[in-house]
Length: 477
Image 1: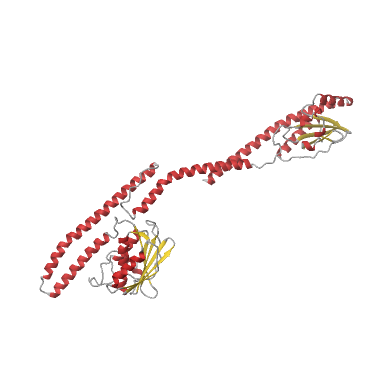
Image 2: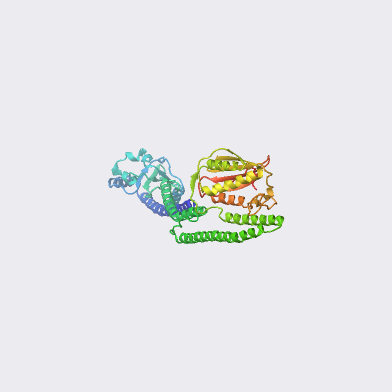
């Protein structure tokens, strides 16, 4: 916009300056021709006078106040400090010389310009300002302006020079002023500031609803029950807000319907599983009874895991400011009762999160670390506007090609499906879902000295954009 406004002003000034200079030259051309013909008439008149009458006529003209010409007859050429340059001066000089040559046959006339304060007259070369006002001095002065005076001198006969001085009433006749003057720069700046100010006000007014839409979109990932977006602003923004609110309602309805569906499935499956378990206990063959009960336990665990996966984050849980160090210490104490060893290093300022969801995420990761590695090492690190939590185990690690796949539901790299060798393969997927819902990221990487490191990067601002995390080595099953 700045480039466009300045470009438009530059183009307009170029056009205006070109037209103004062209108009001034046309005016100067017409005026100089008229004055040149008048000077030619004056010269012709003095030529026709007898020599003895010339001074009498000049004295009478001076006594009468003079004319727009100052005319004198001198016995030598008066030296003139010629001033001015440019196309205007060349035009005037060419017109005078051409007219004098065509009208009088004089081809050696001197056409010059002088400043009024430097102009000399008469045989004694007296300055213009030293002449009596009754001699017509006022005809060559335009106080307080000081335009250059046109002086034409020509030799009428030996030791007889006709001297004619006059003014061309054109302001700034030979001023070589740049087209981009200070006044024009000031005008351009004022126009630019006005246009930019009004444009910024208009753009700000149009983009405020877009800012609300952006914030609502960020908040939607954390809270489906957030208030609907205000439907105001330009027509297109209102239509977008209406569509956004409709999308939020549909997402909330679908999530609730999914929870109801899995809850119903889980509830409905409990009864037949229980009946099957009772019938299995009545089997006579101990081996078949044990295998049957193991299959039922695994089926029950899969149903509970599927329901837990759907409810990965409690969408209705409010955000709270908690200390993750205290939360990790509490989880470490619980795991120590089960024979697990958890070492925690570092500290961090309180973070605004959903407490139960984050607790479940960290519990899944710590339980995996204890199960596969026997012990876990946890480090907290503040990194500007983010918090980095690295959880390392000392297990076998995960092949690089499998690290992305372990986040998929029901994927377990441990080949056994026994209830005694691990869960259903939902823990990592639920953990990453919780972290991403907080605007962060969870990744895995093998440690150079063995084991796996799971790294969580959480933003300090709740609902912020998902952050890129750098995962250290570690392993979770």
